[in-house]
Image 1 (cartoon, rainbow, N blue to C red):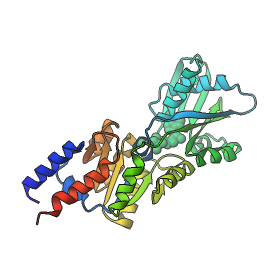
Image 2: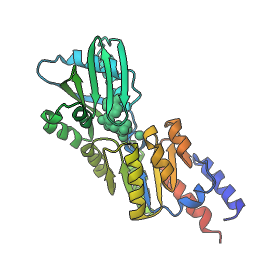
Image 3: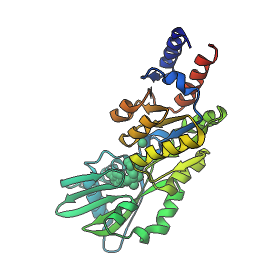
Length: 292
Ligand code: ADP
Ligand code: MG
């Protein structure tokens, strides 16, 4: 490609809301064989809402929800925002939190009014020595509906399960179809529950699913899928996507995502609309295709 064609392609990208941050991303995108996407905030809006809540015997629902909201008020995770919003919408009074810590990919721990509160994935409960299996049937049914089950323990006792639902962006199905039309394999790589991930993937016709992975697991999945399918593009928005964005042949960050993701990416999609991904690949093919 000539410097002029690259300049024209880069300028056309800017018009389409696609910013090429690093030199050769425009040249390399045309070779992509597999596109890997994060789920939360990338395929979905990243604005989950609390849809279900069940407490075990001996716990008061409103009391538990207020404790969870207090604990989650310190977390930036979308799940946390859904829980806080639900408590506020119900006008529950949310107590102050004394101490707070988060375990990336697992959940959070906090002390609220002298009570120890843990909120997170089933693997987080197991890590605490608790057995989330009492909720298994319910959790699987919620996940079938593409909802994420989240567990809560109070003072070291399993207390509740809540579910959050994160709607798919209206533009996502069209973008996945466009990627398939370009002959690409489409994979989802997510930290979320595997049943939830499978339900979302099925509804979108996604070819491969890697679920329940930590940031390092996302990176490992990129390596594996690259070996299996060839040149790769990874799209994500979160801190947990940064290693995967750096590992992929081309990393594309959602412009509304975290700074850490944007820093790790070669390309920034200015809007959350994933149509930017097939657009960027088509632009790369058009820019490089005509020049010999
Ligand atoms: P993702 O963004 O793909 O869900 P994360 O690594 O951020 O991946 O989180 C993985 C899982 O850990 C979440 O799906 C959720 O079950 C749990 N989790 C993380 N942070 C929180 C939190 N603040 N509150 C409740 N659960 C959490
Ligand atoms: Mg995300």
